[in-house]
Amino acid sequence: MDKAERYRDLKAEIDSVVAGETSVTARYATAACILAQAMAPRFFWTGFYVVDPLKPRELVVGPYQGTLGCLRIAFGKGVCGHVAASGEPILVPDVHAFPGHIACDSASNSEVVVPVFDSDGELVAVLDVDSTDLDAFDATDLAGLVAICNSLLVA
Image 1 (cartoon, helix red, strand yellow):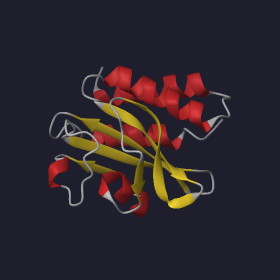
Image 2: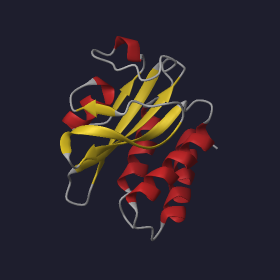
Image 3: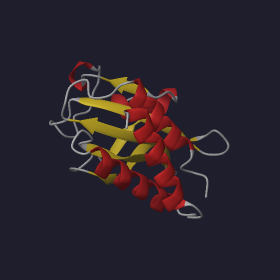
Image 4: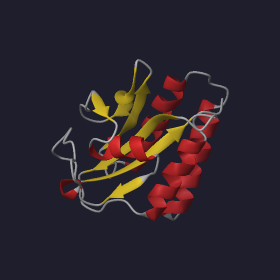
């Protein structure tokens, strides 16, 4: 099975498991768990940073699998904050070369971050996936993760 097929299968599995679940937290936790387990060890850290409703220009750590994550990230800061501010997904082959990178875990070397929007098109979270390998992610990873994020808020 090639990587694109694997992502299609993972999306179908996540969609099936969370079907009818109204808790966004449960949906994010399930997606993070399934992705982390299926893609280990390449996915070193897999999780969501959610927009804080009390501080709408900050992300706060949400459900994740991996080592301790940053608790808060301001929009525009680091890779996750960049995606929160721009609303565009990003591949970062070497996080150490990314201007303003926030080192939540020094073992992380590459990253892919995807925005998650609600049905009104408002940013509600970002999916953050880190790898200990340099250049661990490609356009297939990005497309697969975008497809998964696009269905996470549909109960």
